[in-house]
Image 1: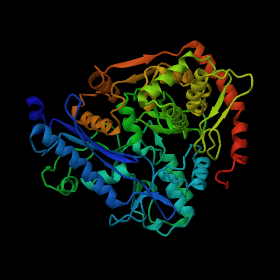
Image 2: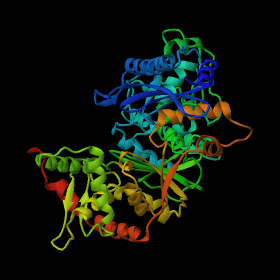
Image 3: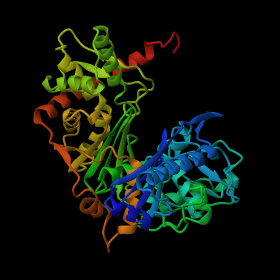
Amino acid sequence: MDQDLKQAIAKGETSLGIEFGSTRIKAVLIDHRFKTIASGSYEWENLLVDGYWTYNLADIIAGLQVAYREMKQEVERDYGIPLQTVGSIGFSAMMHGYMAFDSMGELLVPFRTWRNATTGAAAKELTDQFQFNIPERWSIAHLYQAILNEEQHVPRIDYLTTLAGYIHGLLTGNKVIGIGDASGMFPIDEAAQDYHASMVKQFDELVAAKGYPWKLKGILPKVLTAGEQAGVLTEAGAKLLDPSGTLQPGIPLCPPEGDAGTGMVATNSVRKRTGNISVGTSVFAMIVLEKELTAVYPEIDLVTTPDGSLVGMVHANNCSSDINAWMGLFREFYEAMGQKVDSNQLFGVLFNKAMAADPDGGGLLSYGYFSGENITGIEKGRPLFVRSPESRFNLANFMRTHLFTAFAALKIGMDILTKKEDVAIDSILAHGGLFKTPLVGQKMVAAALNVPVSVMATAGEGGAWGMAILAAYMMNKAQQESLDDFLDQQVFKEVEGQEVDPDGSDVKGFEAFMERYTKGLAIEQAAVDHLVENGRD
């Protein structure tokens, strides 16, 4: 056993991050070298109640306590000491959504998550009003839609926050929020490091005739940036987090953040001209901008880093689902031949075939649309594979085509940033299961975006670890040390990574594929229009 580490835990030379994801709540305790000491988790699912996707408050609290308890028990098991204190704590959660409270602190309507697509009218009207893209999942869109619907609870609103802001308030009593999470509630003015004052005024004027007893700024949480202290753990908060009573109050907390911000921290991509790409069922890229965009684009959300720099976010609904479905088919064939196959070997062999393909995928075309795709305006999911008699149909081209199409919708949004807005990108860090096979996924993304792409050894650490890093930054912040310098010089200084530069032939091949992909969207739309699912549309 590491005696130094045992002493560090006893003295509270640690930081704790707890993140509420869409399917899992995770707690991660790190040491002063930013290594994970212990972790705990709680699986949960959202519920559809009265037409809204939600999580109930009892599950939120139960999940918080279970994740903390599992982490605490791991510390006690591995180091033989009770966890009585930590150096700093931070909470993060899914961004956006709607949690509205009255003056007594009672939740007025069940928590409405980011997943609800019920705010279309409000989002469009606010986008037109502000000349700033307001996505449907943003908190202000939820509020304005409730106003348009004349919901009875609206006049009683005393406080509006996110899930992370709610948890932070329970444990500290403070109504504050990190600037990255705030940027998913309402537009942020980068220069002021606060809500955009002129848009706040516009909103108040828009709803003035309703005669509500509140003004917008008065019901939103106070905005804080990374490094600031956001309160301390109260006695009631300590008992809520650790009902056993072992945890002591008085621990400082950093500003609560959104999952986008913790992802940026966990991938060391908060410096201007850097970015990260996260790959899973959906795919999104976040690029830290040097200047504001010149126009409003529905394909691009504008949020911020945890230290307040403007970020352009491109999110595509579909990425790896269709690849996984084809992999399942290849697995079935292999097993039908009487063979057993390891998943990593299956993906590795097939992904590596893509390296031997024609640069453009041989004239093949695929749309991995398991659901509708917001970037291309396709409303329903119809996975599609298409070729002509002249296409070079072989396994290598087949695999390259499916890897290319996984990033095609994303590229449309990214091209707006790089080609229309001349956004400079020095490097992108990629994370997600698709990159477990070395080099292949990186080469495809580098070809799509025409920038160097890195995968780091820490890329699998996740948002709870990133939140713990933000808590550590608050405690370790040297005089005037910026968050990007702290990450570069302390957290990631010795972290190994592998960078892949774009290959000129692959870049040209992806551009040729994109011409085919864009022209073929009419085929995909025809599939939506005419391919009936289970005898019904």
